[in-house]
Each structure stands twice: as C-alpha cells, then as structure tokens.
Length: 421
Image 1 (cartoon, rainbow, N blue to C red):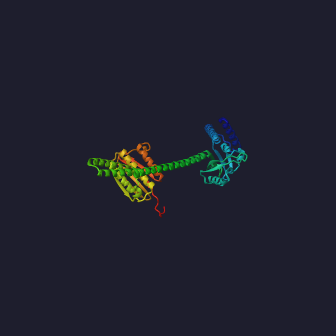
Image 2 (cartoon, helix red, strand yellow; image 1 turned 180 degrees about the horizontal axis):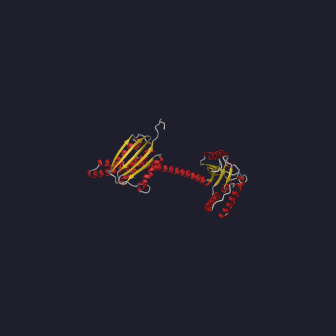
Image 3 (cartoon, rainbow, N blue to C red; image 1 turned 135 degrees about the vertical axis):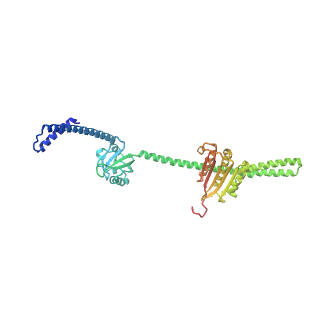
C-alpha cells in the first residue's frame, strides 16, 4: 500500500505537469509580502491535503475490512446465496449454493437454476424470480431441489427461497436458498405421531366406552337380580311372617311383628340399592321423574335441602344420556355430602336447543379446580367428564373457596324424526 508521503509527492508531480501544460497566464512578479502570504497558503493547503489523504487511507482500510468480512460471511454461511436474472439464470453463487447443487462453479454460472427443480415447479420458480426483480420487495416460497446428474441420482430436498431485489444491476435478484428438508421431515414425523396419538386416544376412548357399558350392564344385571330374586324372596318371607302372626298367640305375634318390620326395612334397603345401581324408572317415566325420585330419597336420608327445577325436559331421552345425567347427579351429591359442608343444593335439568343440561350448585366450601385431577373429590368428576365426552358432551366445573361449586354437564340430543339437522 502506498505511503501518505508517496501519495503527496505523486500529487505534486501531477500538479506541476498540469500547470506546465495549461498555465498560459502573464508572468507574475509578486512582492515579498505576497510571497510570504502565498507560502503560508501553500503550507496550509499542504496540511489539508495530508489530512485528506489520511482520511482517505483510513476509509480505504475500513472498506477493505468490510469487504473481507462480507466475503468471509458470503463464503462461509451455510445457506446457498444466488444472484439471478429475472429468468432464473445464475450470475453468482456462494460455496454453500455450489455444494447444494453438486456442480462445479464454472458449470453453474450461466446455468438456469430452475433446471434443478421438478418440471411441475419450474414455472412457479420463474414467476417468483420475476416478481422479486420487478416488484422490488422481499418474497419467499418453498420448492423441491433436485440434481442434474444422472450418474448419481439422489432424493429431492425441500428448500425455502427468500428473494430480495439486487441493489446493483437492474432487475437482478438475490435469492437465499435454505435447506429445510430436516424441518419438513420432522414436521411429517410429528404429524404422523399426532395421527398415531389420535388413533390411540380413539382406541382408549372406545375401550373406556366399552368399560362403562359393561359396568352399566353389570349394574343393571345386579339390580335386576336384587329386585327379581332377593326382593321377591323377602316379600314371600314377609308374607309368611304375617301369616304366622295371625295364627299364633300374642307373645309370638309380637315377635313376628318385629321380624316383619326388620324384613320390611331390609327389603326397602335392597330396593334403594337396586335403584342406585340402575334406576329402571327412567325407562318408564323418564329421566325427570327418575331424578325427582332419587332426590326425594336423598333428602330423606341426608336431610340436605335440595331445590329441583326441570325446564322443557323431553319425555324420552336416550338411555346412555339418561345414565350419564343420573351418574353425574349421584357423584356430585356424594361429593357435596362428603366434602362441601353445604346446607343447600340447587339442581336444574334444562333442555336448550338440541342439548340437555344438568346444573348442580352447592353453597359450600369450594375447592381449587386446578387440583381436580389429584384430589379425591376431583377423581370422580374426571371420570364423569370422560363419560360426557364419549357422548360428544362436556362437563365443566367452577368453584370458589368459601362460595361454593357448580358442576354442569351438557349432552347433545338426537334430532327429532322429520326435522333437518
């Protein structure tokens, strides 16, 4: 690099030559005062030139450093970087782009980049290059990148193209080519895993539905056995004790009356158990009356005040829907007695549009809903929520400590026949 002194000497010689060749003015004989002034001005100009030369030198050094950094980044960045014409012809490419296309640099310059794409995507790529060059804004698109070599065929890779207009040549475009094959493969794998997870979840839901159906069938069978066998036998035994009571003396009759009362209490207990296992009443009188009957027994046993309201409840409700409503009421009231310390409960059974809702509200202690999956109170509600989801319904729980808890289950109802859904 030339030194500042050498630059000044070179400029001085050029100035002398210029003045010798172009200066045709009349000779000038300055006075001593003018000479001193001119010498001073020359010295000042000389210092100014030296300072300007130093600034130019520093600017040149900065530009060279910037160029080195740019070249280093351009050549080392792991992203293909192409300078393209609007027709997609390669004018320049960095080493990463060369590695992507697996062609030597001298074979790529002047080559059309769209030849490395599947035929079905070439027109879209050319339009992309034209839009980048003419619309003067950043654009992006995804394409599949192939290989021109027939000797070494390889699988296509997916790349993301990000193009911006070039600052220099007219209508040129700078295109960054980013290999996103790994990301695409990860996305496909994630999508496949999500599909497998959904399938597994569906299988689990089906198994859960089968388990609930089996449980309900077992409860129905046990309830029927208690009603048809045990209750009948106890009824016969009660009839026999009454007959014996009428045909014996008073001391024995007194004992038989006590025995009859005990048999009658046992009979009622078994009927309550059978009803709790499977209240067959809704098959005959409907879910509304079944809940009313259950609540009468519940208030009689627990002495807890329950306000029940039914609005537009249909006479016929699908059996699985009725079972879900009944089990929800059972579980919620069991939790109220066991945990809530409430003095009053409100129960509403409401038909809204094409759904039926059961809302149970207590004014008790309340609890943290976030701990529902781990608390004893919440485990039963989680099971009820799964039961509702099997019927395409929802169960929501809202609670506030010191205020109370509301449990609401919403279940869809089938469309009436002849009505468009």
